[in-house]
Image (cartoon, rainbow, N blue to C red; front, side, top):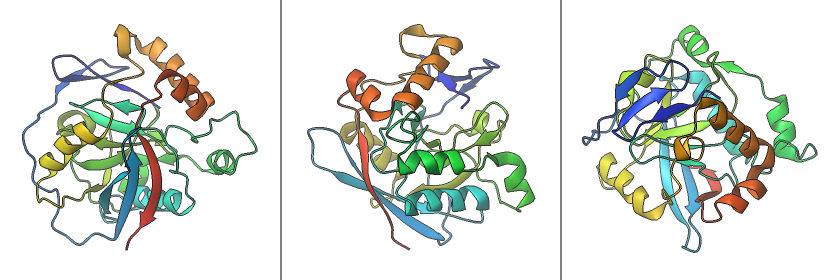
Length: 245
């Protein structure tokens, strides 16, 4: 998948174009007041802490194909055990690059599922399906994409308002973080405490360029949790994913 690189000053750069966009951290109101078509509760844990949960409210009208793909992955338990591999406080929380066991485990059911999953050209297909695009505001969830705009499984939550850049690049939110407190900003601030953001951007850490970042990404995708845990044993991981409605 294409990787967008955040800079130390809060500016985000796409790894190919290196075009800057400033990420804003102001409190964003909920993206929509409309009734969600599905709600998904996700359990997560940061060792050695006890598990906690967050809920995503999905809206099929925003991006029908992305919405349906996410629910399909939830039903097949594809998310179980995923590590939150890229946790950048002023940018995104990113996971699901490949099966949790790694792509080399060819007999695993999740690898067979991944290999059989069709590529989705997000921007083109959502437009064709009549999706009502929403901005990549804080708390929205969308699929990551390859350089050509296609996706399989990578998912990210916007930690801040990334709309200025990601909207132009064709990233389509299909849901949003559901806030029990009424404030998405407060919920996301809570994540900074309950989730492990200390390792940050595992692909671009240490000043890595795009080539090195891609090598690291391949290592994560091939090696899965065994490789990830050998490098970052305290990484936050997903447990169960439950479709509520």
